[in-house]
Amino acid sequence: MYAIVEILGKQFKVEKNQKLFVNRLAVDEGKKVSFDNVLMLNDGTKFSVGTPNVSGAQVDAKVLKHLKSDKVIVFKKKRRKGYKVKNGHRQAITEIEISDILTGISKKSASKKTESKKVQPKKKATNDKVSEDAKQDISKLSVAALKKIAKEKGISGISSMKKADLIKALS
Image (cartoon, rainbow, N blue to C red; front, side):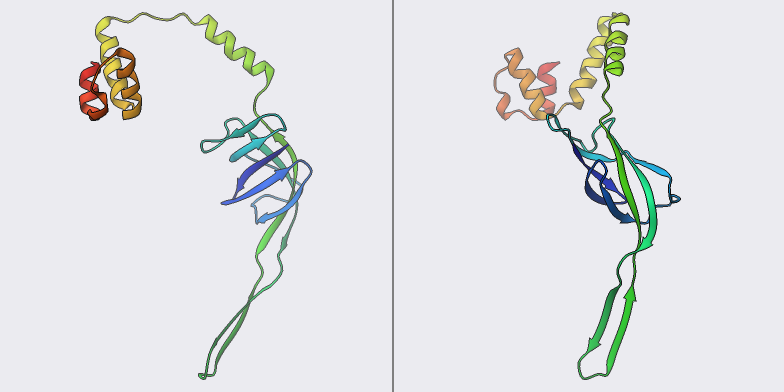
């Protein structure tokens, strides 16, 4: 099982028990941290891609230590001018270990959702409210969805219609 998670603006492919270096986190050493911004999840059989995030998925990690990365030398020089500048930089980083990748789907929560849907009865609204709701819903749909609905209702000439014309024809 692996996941692609965004940590402080950078994307990492992580697996359970993997150690990796990320930009400095504002968490003490030895503490646990969780990342909710999971972009993709693969558990071997099921492959989930988020739009933009996978809902309910979470990556848990433990902060091992804070340290600095290797030194990067920045050397600037201009020819024939006698200009030379040498600077160095060490980025502050944190070493973390991925402790768990949670998919957010459990059998108990799925059964509770289906039970709650069965218990709630549907309320009937008046025809005026239904038609107003339908008009509002139709105006929010894309042109492709409107053309599909018009095709199902048997309206002809939909290929040359614009969105406003499609809304008029459907209402």
